[in-house]
Length: 173
Image 1 (cartoon, rainbow, N blue to C red):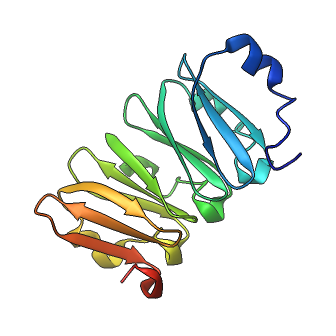
Image 2 (image 1 turned 120 degrees about the vertical axis):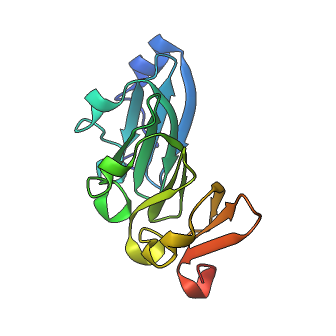
């Protein structure tokens, strides 16, 4: 029940609203974007099932991405709100001021990577699994797309080159 399988705590809201636009999941929680841009969460609190600490910020949500134990939501103004386990990207306070004009967020199992409108990238979460892109940051320019494995990111640049980071033995080299 505490892994998201029991939605009884939010069932009335889900039934009455009938306006779920998108659902995203961590390993143990769900987050639903509603038609008014708000977010409804349920499941294990430590895995993002409790968004009460950031609920007031979750307005005009356009996209939600998830690691195994955290969520990140892109708002209409391009800002990002994250919650869940801080070890898995649930706390973006160290990079929050850089998270402006975000176009896309991608996730490994442990970290997030955001592409900004200028083509640069901001990362947070577990450093060993993609949350620290310092070693390749100077190469992350004109990024068009990011994909992820469970432990590494790959960014496609405008010129077609690919830059990777995260667990070296598993694709991040």
